[in-house]
Image 1 (cartoon, helix red, strand yellow):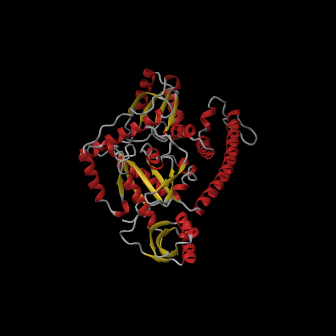
Image 2: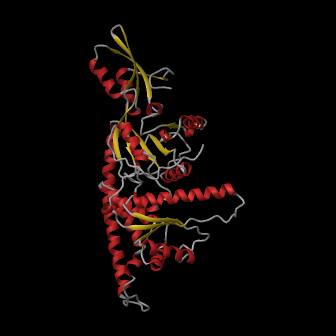
Image 3: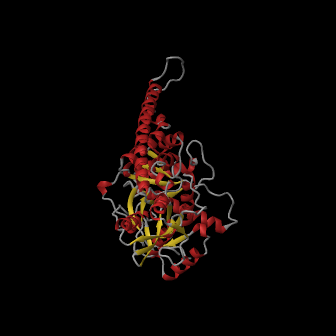
Length: 467
Protein backbone atom coordinates (compact mmCIF):
# COMPACT_ATOMS: atom_id res chain seq x y z
CA UNK A 1 0.00 0.00 0.00
CA UNK A 2 1.41 3.42 -0.90
CA UNK A 3 2.28 5.76 2.00
CA UNK A 4 -0.44 8.28 2.54
CA UNK A 5 0.15 12.00 2.66
CA UNK A 6 -0.32 13.56 6.05
CA UNK A 7 -2.36 16.71 6.36
CA UNK A 8 0.32 18.30 8.53
CA UNK A 9 -2.10 19.13 11.30
CA UNK A 10 -4.27 21.40 9.17
CA UNK A 11 -7.27 20.48 11.30
CA UNK A 12 -5.45 21.44 14.47
CA UNK A 13 -7.01 24.41 16.28
CA UNK A 14 -4.65 27.29 15.60
CA UNK A 15 -3.75 29.45 18.58
CA UNK A 16 -3.62 33.19 18.29
CA UNK A 17 -0.29 34.93 18.68
CA UNK A 18 -1.28 36.24 22.10
CA UNK A 19 -1.97 32.71 23.30
CA UNK A 20 1.50 31.52 22.33
CA UNK A 21 3.73 30.61 25.24
CA UNK A 22 6.98 31.37 23.41
CA UNK A 23 9.21 30.47 20.48
CA UNK A 24 11.04 27.18 20.52
CA UNK A 25 13.42 25.06 18.51
CA UNK A 26 12.84 21.30 18.51
CA UNK A 27 15.82 18.95 18.29
CA UNK A 28 15.56 15.23 17.51
CA UNK A 29 18.82 13.64 18.76
CA UNK A 30 18.20 10.16 17.38
CA UNK A 31 20.78 7.41 17.51
CA UNK A 32 22.19 6.59 14.10
CA UNK A 33 22.87 3.01 13.04
CA UNK A 34 26.51 2.12 12.50
CA UNK A 35 25.71 -0.62 10.01
CA UNK A 36 26.76 1.45 7.03
CA UNK A 37 24.79 1.66 3.79
CA UNK A 38 24.66 -2.07 3.10
CA UNK A 39 20.98 -2.32 3.86
CA UNK A 40 19.37 0.55 1.96
CA UNK A 41 15.84 -0.53 2.90
CA UNK A 42 16.73 -0.51 6.59
CA UNK A 43 18.42 2.87 6.28
CA UNK A 44 15.37 4.45 4.62
CA UNK A 45 13.11 2.99 7.30
CA UNK A 46 15.29 4.54 10.03
CA UNK A 47 15.12 7.97 8.36
CA UNK A 48 11.34 7.76 7.99
CA UNK A 49 10.92 6.77 11.65
CA UNK A 50 13.11 9.68 12.72
CA UNK A 51 10.95 12.08 10.73
CA UNK A 52 7.82 10.62 12.30
CA UNK A 53 9.36 11.06 15.75
CA UNK A 54 10.24 14.66 14.96
CA UNK A 55 6.71 15.33 13.71
CA UNK A 56 5.34 13.93 16.95
CA UNK A 57 7.53 16.03 19.25
CA UNK A 58 6.63 19.13 17.21
CA UNK A 59 2.97 18.26 17.79
CA UNK A 60 3.63 17.96 21.51
CA UNK A 61 5.25 21.41 21.53
CA UNK A 62 2.30 22.94 19.70
CA UNK A 63 -0.05 21.27 22.18
CA UNK A 64 1.04 23.85 24.78
CA UNK A 65 0.85 26.73 22.29
CA UNK A 66 4.57 26.98 21.58
CA UNK A 67 5.58 28.53 18.27
CA UNK A 68 8.03 26.10 16.69
CA UNK A 69 10.56 28.24 14.82
CA UNK A 70 12.58 25.28 13.57
CA UNK A 71 12.76 21.50 13.96
CA UNK A 72 15.94 19.60 13.18
CA UNK A 73 17.12 16.00 13.31
CA UNK A 74 20.51 15.71 15.00
CA UNK A 75 21.80 12.16 14.40
CA UNK A 76 24.12 10.91 17.14
CA UNK A 77 26.34 7.84 17.04
CA UNK A 78 27.16 7.99 20.74
CA UNK A 79 25.44 9.69 23.65
CA UNK A 80 27.79 12.19 25.32
CA UNK A 81 27.60 12.18 29.15
CA UNK A 82 28.06 15.97 29.32
CA UNK A 83 25.69 17.30 26.65
CA UNK A 84 24.10 14.23 24.98
CA UNK A 85 25.10 15.74 21.60
CA UNK A 86 28.59 16.03 20.18
CA UNK A 87 30.40 19.35 20.54
CA UNK A 88 30.10 20.22 16.86
CA UNK A 89 26.37 19.51 16.70
CA UNK A 90 25.75 21.50 19.89
CA UNK A 91 27.57 24.50 18.38
CA UNK A 92 25.62 24.13 15.12
CA UNK A 93 22.32 24.22 16.99
CA UNK A 94 23.59 27.22 18.98
CA UNK A 95 23.86 29.06 15.67
CA UNK A 96 20.27 28.14 14.76
CA UNK A 97 19.09 29.34 18.17
CA UNK A 98 20.79 32.71 17.66
CA UNK A 99 19.40 33.13 14.14
CA UNK A 100 15.81 32.26 15.10
CA UNK A 101 15.80 34.20 18.37
CA UNK A 102 14.11 31.40 20.32
CA UNK A 103 13.94 31.22 24.11
CA UNK A 104 13.37 27.47 24.54
CA UNK A 105 14.99 24.32 23.16
CA UNK A 106 13.13 21.00 23.29
CA UNK A 107 15.19 17.82 23.14
CA UNK A 108 13.29 14.70 22.08
CA UNK A 109 15.07 12.46 24.58
CA UNK A 110 15.47 11.99 28.32
CA UNK A 111 18.24 14.27 29.60
CA UNK A 112 20.09 13.86 32.85
CA UNK A 113 20.19 16.94 35.12
CA UNK A 114 23.85 17.52 34.21
CA UNK A 115 23.17 17.28 30.46
CA UNK A 116 20.27 19.69 30.78
CA UNK A 117 22.34 22.19 32.75
CA UNK A 118 25.31 22.00 30.36
CA UNK A 119 23.14 22.50 27.27
CA UNK A 120 21.54 25.55 28.88
CA UNK A 121 25.04 26.98 29.45
CA UNK A 122 26.10 26.31 25.86
CA UNK A 123 22.91 27.62 24.24
CA UNK A 124 22.05 30.36 26.73
CA UNK A 125 18.33 29.43 26.82
CA UNK A 126 16.07 27.10 28.76
CA UNK A 127 16.20 23.44 27.72
CA UNK A 128 13.32 21.02 28.16
CA UNK A 129 13.52 17.27 27.52
CA UNK A 130 10.73 14.94 26.39
CA UNK A 131 9.71 13.99 29.92
CA UNK A 132 9.49 17.61 31.04
CA UNK A 133 7.43 18.56 27.97
CA UNK A 134 4.91 15.75 28.49
CA UNK A 135 4.62 16.66 32.18
CA UNK A 136 3.94 20.26 31.16
CA UNK A 137 1.15 19.16 28.81
CA UNK A 138 -0.40 16.91 31.42
CA UNK A 139 -0.25 19.71 33.97
CA UNK A 140 -2.24 22.00 31.67
CA UNK A 141 -4.81 19.46 30.54
CA UNK A 142 -5.72 17.56 33.73
CA UNK A 143 -9.04 18.91 34.98
CA UNK A 144 -10.21 16.52 37.69
CA UNK A 145 -8.77 16.56 41.20
CA UNK A 146 -7.29 13.10 40.74
CA UNK A 147 -5.63 14.00 37.45
CA UNK A 148 -4.17 17.22 38.86
CA UNK A 149 -2.78 15.40 41.90
CA UNK A 150 -1.23 12.65 39.79
CA UNK A 151 0.41 15.15 37.46
CA UNK A 152 1.77 17.21 40.35
CA UNK A 153 3.17 14.09 42.00
CA UNK A 154 4.93 13.03 38.80
CA UNK A 155 6.26 16.55 38.27
CA UNK A 156 7.65 16.82 41.81
CA UNK A 157 9.38 13.45 41.54
CA UNK A 158 10.90 14.60 38.24
CA UNK A 159 11.93 18.00 39.58
CA UNK A 160 13.47 16.70 42.81
CA UNK A 161 16.44 15.25 40.92
CA UNK A 162 17.01 18.56 39.12
CA UNK A 163 17.14 20.92 42.09
CA UNK A 164 20.85 21.46 41.60
CA UNK A 165 19.98 23.52 38.52
CA UNK A 166 17.80 25.91 40.48
CA UNK A 167 20.56 27.13 42.76
CA UNK A 168 23.63 27.51 40.52
CA UNK A 169 23.67 31.25 41.32
CA UNK A 170 24.38 30.56 45.00
CA UNK A 171 27.78 30.01 46.56
CA UNK A 172 28.65 26.32 47.05
CA UNK A 173 30.67 24.83 49.88
CA UNK A 174 34.14 23.69 48.76
CA UNK A 175 35.02 21.78 51.93
CA UNK A 176 34.22 21.32 55.60
CA UNK A 177 32.22 18.92 57.68
CA UNK A 178 29.84 18.76 60.64
CA UNK A 179 27.54 21.80 60.79
CA UNK A 180 29.54 23.79 58.26
CA UNK A 181 27.91 24.24 54.90
CA UNK A 182 27.57 26.79 52.14
CA UNK A 183 24.29 28.68 51.58
CA UNK A 184 23.66 26.95 48.25
CA UNK A 185 23.94 23.52 49.80
CA UNK A 186 21.61 24.51 52.66
CA UNK A 187 19.00 25.92 50.29
CA UNK A 188 18.99 22.78 48.12
CA UNK A 189 18.52 20.55 51.13
CA UNK A 190 15.68 22.72 52.43
CA UNK A 191 13.98 22.69 49.06
CA UNK A 192 14.30 18.90 48.80
CA UNK A 193 12.74 18.58 52.23
CA UNK A 194 9.80 20.80 51.24
CA UNK A 195 9.26 18.84 48.03
CA UNK A 196 9.44 15.57 49.97
CA UNK A 197 6.78 16.79 52.39
CA UNK A 198 4.56 17.91 49.52
CA UNK A 199 4.97 14.52 47.82
CA UNK A 200 3.87 12.77 51.02
CA UNK A 201 0.76 14.97 51.29
CA UNK A 202 -0.17 14.37 47.63
CA UNK A 203 0.30 10.62 47.99
CA UNK A 204 -2.09 10.65 50.96
CA UNK A 205 -4.67 12.64 48.98
CA UNK A 206 -4.36 10.29 46.01
CA UNK A 207 -4.94 7.34 48.34
CA UNK A 208 -8.23 8.92 49.43
CA UNK A 209 -9.26 9.61 45.81
CA UNK A 210 -8.43 6.03 44.86
CA UNK A 211 -10.63 4.77 47.69
CA UNK A 212 -13.51 6.88 46.37
CA UNK A 213 -12.93 5.55 42.85
CA UNK A 214 -13.01 1.97 44.16
CA UNK A 215 -16.36 2.69 45.85
CA UNK A 216 -17.76 4.02 42.59
CA UNK A 217 -16.45 0.97 40.73
CA UNK A 218 -17.97 -1.35 43.33
CA UNK A 219 -21.29 0.44 42.87
CA UNK A 220 -21.16 -0.13 39.12
CA UNK A 221 -20.33 -3.78 39.65
CA UNK A 222 -23.44 -4.20 41.79
CA UNK A 223 -25.67 -2.87 39.00
CA UNK A 224 -23.88 -4.64 37.20
CA UNK A 225 -22.61 -3.05 34.02
CA UNK A 226 -19.76 -4.46 32.01
CA UNK A 227 -16.91 -2.03 31.32
CA UNK A 228 -15.47 -1.44 27.85
CA UNK A 229 -12.29 0.66 27.89
CA UNK A 230 -10.77 2.62 25.01
CA UNK A 231 -6.99 2.69 24.79
CA UNK A 232 -4.67 3.77 22.04
CA UNK A 233 -1.93 6.06 20.90
CA UNK A 234 -2.60 9.73 21.46
CA UNK A 235 -4.52 11.33 18.59
CA UNK A 236 -5.71 7.95 17.29
CA UNK A 237 -9.33 9.13 17.46
CA UNK A 238 -10.43 7.62 20.80
CA UNK A 239 -12.51 10.60 21.89
CA UNK A 240 -14.18 10.87 18.47
CA UNK A 241 -15.04 7.16 18.64
CA UNK A 242 -16.25 7.60 22.22
CA UNK A 243 -18.61 10.37 21.11
CA UNK A 244 -19.83 8.28 18.16
CA UNK A 245 -20.57 5.23 20.33
CA UNK A 246 -22.20 7.07 23.24
CA UNK A 247 -23.48 10.27 21.58
CA UNK A 248 -21.49 12.23 24.13
CA UNK A 249 -19.64 15.52 23.62
CA UNK A 250 -16.17 14.80 24.96
CA UNK A 251 -13.54 17.17 23.55
CA UNK A 252 -12.07 15.70 20.38
CA UNK A 253 -9.40 17.57 18.42
CA UNK A 254 -6.54 16.86 16.04
CA UNK A 255 -4.11 17.43 18.88
CA UNK A 256 -1.84 15.24 20.98
CA UNK A 257 -3.28 14.64 24.47
CA UNK A 258 -6.48 16.58 23.73
CA UNK A 259 -8.12 14.83 26.70
CA UNK A 260 -6.49 13.38 29.79
CA UNK A 261 -9.09 12.70 32.45
CA UNK A 262 -11.08 9.44 32.22
CA UNK A 263 -14.72 9.70 31.14
CA UNK A 264 -17.48 7.11 31.61
CA UNK A 265 -20.73 6.97 29.62
CA UNK A 266 -23.43 4.35 29.02
CA UNK A 267 -23.01 2.29 25.86
CA UNK A 268 -26.22 0.95 24.31
CA UNK A 269 -25.73 -2.40 22.57
CA UNK A 270 -27.73 -3.57 19.49
CA UNK A 271 -30.05 -6.00 21.33
CA UNK A 272 -30.94 -3.84 24.30
CA UNK A 273 -27.96 -4.59 26.51
CA UNK A 274 -25.86 -1.89 28.16
CA UNK A 275 -22.23 -1.45 29.13
CA UNK A 276 -20.07 1.37 30.48
CA UNK A 277 -17.61 2.86 27.99
CA UNK A 278 -14.45 4.43 29.42
CA UNK A 279 -12.26 6.90 27.53
CA UNK A 280 -8.73 7.01 28.96
CA UNK A 281 -5.56 9.03 28.45
CA UNK A 282 -3.72 8.41 25.20
CA UNK A 283 -0.41 6.58 25.20
CA UNK A 284 2.77 7.73 23.52
CA UNK A 285 6.21 6.35 22.76
CA UNK A 286 8.72 6.62 25.59
CA UNK A 287 5.98 7.59 28.04
CA UNK A 288 7.82 8.77 31.18
CA UNK A 289 7.96 6.11 33.87
CA UNK A 290 6.69 8.66 36.39
CA UNK A 291 3.47 9.05 34.43
CA UNK A 292 2.89 5.31 33.96
CA UNK A 293 3.14 4.98 37.74
CA UNK A 294 1.20 8.13 38.56
CA UNK A 295 -1.66 7.34 36.20
CA UNK A 296 -1.93 3.73 37.28
CA UNK A 297 -5.03 4.62 39.32
CA UNK A 298 -6.61 6.37 36.32
CA UNK A 299 -5.82 3.35 34.17
CA UNK A 300 -7.47 1.00 36.66
CA UNK A 301 -10.52 1.25 34.40
CA UNK A 302 -8.43 -0.45 31.72
CA UNK A 303 -7.11 -3.08 34.12
CA UNK A 304 -10.63 -3.91 35.34
CA UNK A 305 -12.33 -3.71 31.93
CA UNK A 306 -14.20 -6.67 30.46
CA UNK A 307 -13.24 -5.59 26.94
CA UNK A 308 -10.39 -3.35 25.79
CA UNK A 309 -10.75 -1.53 22.47
CA UNK A 310 -7.29 -0.69 21.14
CA UNK A 311 -7.97 2.22 18.79
CA UNK A 312 -5.37 2.67 16.06
CA UNK A 313 -4.95 5.42 13.49
CA UNK A 314 -4.44 2.96 10.66
CA UNK A 315 -3.78 5.83 8.23
CA UNK A 316 -0.67 6.96 10.11
CA UNK A 317 2.66 6.18 8.47
CA UNK A 318 3.99 4.85 11.79
CA UNK A 319 0.89 2.84 12.73
CA UNK A 320 2.81 -0.37 13.42
CA UNK A 321 5.29 1.37 15.73
CA UNK A 322 2.43 3.04 17.57
CA UNK A 323 0.79 -0.34 18.12
CA UNK A 324 4.00 -1.66 19.68
CA UNK A 325 4.21 1.35 21.98
CA UNK A 326 0.65 0.80 23.22
CA UNK A 327 1.32 -2.90 23.73
CA UNK A 328 4.34 -2.02 25.89
CA UNK A 329 2.23 0.17 28.20
CA UNK A 330 -0.51 -2.47 28.39
CA UNK A 331 2.06 -5.03 29.49
CA UNK A 332 3.29 -2.60 32.15
CA UNK A 333 -0.29 -2.61 33.44
CA UNK A 334 -0.30 -6.41 33.55
CA UNK A 335 -2.39 -6.87 30.36
CA UNK A 336 -1.10 -9.21 27.66
CA UNK A 337 -2.42 -7.95 24.29
CA UNK A 338 -1.29 -11.16 22.60
CA UNK A 339 -3.59 -13.24 24.80
CA UNK A 340 -6.47 -11.66 22.91
CA UNK A 341 -9.18 -12.87 25.26
CA UNK A 342 -10.72 -9.43 25.68
CA UNK A 343 -8.75 -7.13 23.36
CA UNK A 344 -10.24 -5.87 20.09
CA UNK A 345 -8.20 -3.73 17.71
CA UNK A 346 -10.15 -0.92 16.09
CA UNK A 347 -8.54 0.31 12.88
CA UNK A 348 -9.81 3.88 12.78
CA UNK A 349 -9.79 6.60 10.09
CA UNK A 350 -10.48 4.30 7.14
CA UNK A 351 -12.33 7.21 5.53
CA UNK A 352 -8.88 8.47 4.50
CA UNK A 353 -8.45 5.49 2.16
CA UNK A 354 -9.88 4.78 -1.28
CA UNK A 355 -12.30 1.89 -1.87
CA UNK A 356 -9.48 -0.29 -3.21
CA UNK A 357 -7.27 0.44 -0.22
CA UNK A 358 -10.12 -0.34 2.18
CA UNK A 359 -10.65 -3.69 0.50
CA UNK A 360 -6.94 -4.44 0.88
CA UNK A 361 -7.12 -3.50 4.58
CA UNK A 362 -10.18 -5.73 5.04
CA UNK A 363 -8.26 -8.66 3.52
CA UNK A 364 -5.34 -8.02 5.88
CA UNK A 365 -7.72 -7.90 8.84
CA UNK A 366 -9.40 -11.15 7.79
CA UNK A 367 -6.07 -12.98 7.77
CA UNK A 368 -5.19 -11.97 11.33
CA UNK A 369 -5.27 -14.68 14.02
CA UNK A 370 -8.37 -14.88 16.24
CA UNK A 371 -6.47 -13.60 19.28
CA UNK A 372 -5.69 -10.35 17.39
CA UNK A 373 -9.19 -9.66 16.02
CA UNK A 374 -9.72 -6.24 14.48
CA UNK A 375 -12.51 -4.13 12.96
CA UNK A 376 -12.29 -1.33 10.40
CA UNK A 377 -14.18 1.82 11.34
CA UNK A 378 -14.37 5.53 10.76
CA UNK A 379 -15.30 7.35 13.94
CA UNK A 380 -15.75 10.47 11.84
CA UNK A 381 -18.34 9.07 9.39
CA UNK A 382 -19.73 6.13 11.39
CA UNK A 383 -18.62 3.48 8.90
CA UNK A 384 -18.13 0.08 10.54
CA UNK A 385 -19.62 1.15 13.90
CA UNK A 386 -22.55 -1.32 13.74
CA UNK A 387 -20.19 -4.28 13.18
CA UNK A 388 -18.01 -3.11 16.08
CA UNK A 389 -20.99 -2.84 18.43
CA UNK A 390 -22.15 -6.32 17.43
CA UNK A 391 -18.66 -7.68 18.15
CA UNK A 392 -18.63 -6.03 21.58
CA UNK A 393 -22.04 -7.52 22.39
CA UNK A 394 -20.98 -10.99 21.21
CA UNK A 395 -17.81 -10.91 23.28
CA UNK A 396 -19.68 -9.79 26.39
CA UNK A 397 -22.33 -12.44 25.79
CA UNK A 398 -19.71 -15.17 25.65
CA UNK A 399 -19.14 -14.80 29.38
CA UNK A 400 -22.85 -14.66 30.29
CA UNK A 401 -25.17 -17.53 31.05
CA UNK A 402 -28.06 -18.34 28.70
CA UNK A 403 -31.13 -19.65 30.57
CA UNK A 404 -34.52 -20.99 29.48
CA UNK A 405 -37.59 -20.73 31.68
CA UNK A 406 -41.38 -20.82 31.68
CA UNK A 407 -43.37 -18.13 33.48
CA UNK A 408 -47.10 -17.44 33.91
CA UNK A 409 -48.29 -14.69 31.61
CA UNK A 410 -50.09 -13.19 34.62
CA UNK A 411 -46.82 -12.74 36.54
CA UNK A 412 -46.29 -9.19 35.37
CA UNK A 413 -43.82 -8.37 38.16
CA UNK A 414 -41.63 -11.36 37.29
CA UNK A 415 -41.68 -10.61 33.56
CA UNK A 416 -40.86 -6.97 34.25
CA UNK A 417 -37.96 -7.99 36.51
CA UNK A 418 -36.54 -10.21 33.78
CA UNK A 419 -36.68 -7.42 31.25
CA UNK A 420 -34.91 -5.05 33.64
CA UNK A 421 -32.20 -7.42 34.85
CA UNK A 422 -31.54 -9.77 31.93
CA UNK A 423 -31.24 -9.67 28.17
CA UNK A 424 -34.39 -11.31 26.79
CA UNK A 425 -33.43 -13.28 23.68
CA UNK A 426 -36.77 -15.01 22.92
CA UNK A 427 -40.25 -14.76 24.37
CA UNK A 428 -43.03 -17.06 23.06
CA UNK A 429 -46.60 -17.23 24.37
CA UNK A 430 -47.78 -20.83 24.81
CA UNK A 431 -51.28 -20.91 26.26
CA UNK A 432 -51.21 -19.03 29.56
CA UNK A 433 -47.44 -19.15 29.89
CA UNK A 434 -44.40 -17.55 28.30
CA UNK A 435 -41.41 -19.64 27.22
CA UNK A 436 -38.41 -17.33 27.54
CA UNK A 437 -34.72 -17.47 26.79
CA UNK A 438 -32.65 -14.89 28.61
CA UNK A 439 -28.98 -14.03 28.91
CA UNK A 440 -27.85 -12.97 32.37
CA UNK A 441 -24.71 -11.79 34.10
CA UNK A 442 -23.07 -14.29 36.43
CA UNK A 443 -23.91 -12.08 39.43
CA UNK A 444 -27.64 -12.68 38.83
CA UNK A 445 -27.50 -16.16 37.35
CA UNK A 446 -28.34 -17.94 40.62
CA UNK A 447 -31.24 -15.53 41.32
CA UNK A 448 -32.90 -16.32 37.97
CA UNK A 449 -32.37 -20.06 38.42
CA UNK A 450 -33.85 -20.16 41.94
CA UNK A 451 -36.71 -17.72 41.37
CA UNK A 452 -37.89 -18.92 37.96
CA UNK A 453 -36.63 -22.54 37.93
CA UNK A 454 -34.54 -21.64 34.92
CA UNK A 455 -32.29 -24.12 33.15
CA UNK A 456 -28.91 -23.15 31.71
CA UNK A 457 -28.50 -23.96 28.01
CA UNK A 458 -26.06 -23.29 25.23
CA UNK A 459 -27.44 -20.60 22.90
CA UNK A 460 -28.21 -21.67 19.36
CA UNK A 461 -26.37 -20.12 16.46
CA UNK A 462 -29.44 -18.21 15.31
CA UNK A 463 -30.22 -16.65 18.68
CA UNK A 464 -30.25 -12.86 18.65
CA UNK A 465 -26.93 -11.34 19.49
CA UNK A 466 -24.90 -14.43 18.63
CA UNK A 467 -22.68 -15.08 15.64
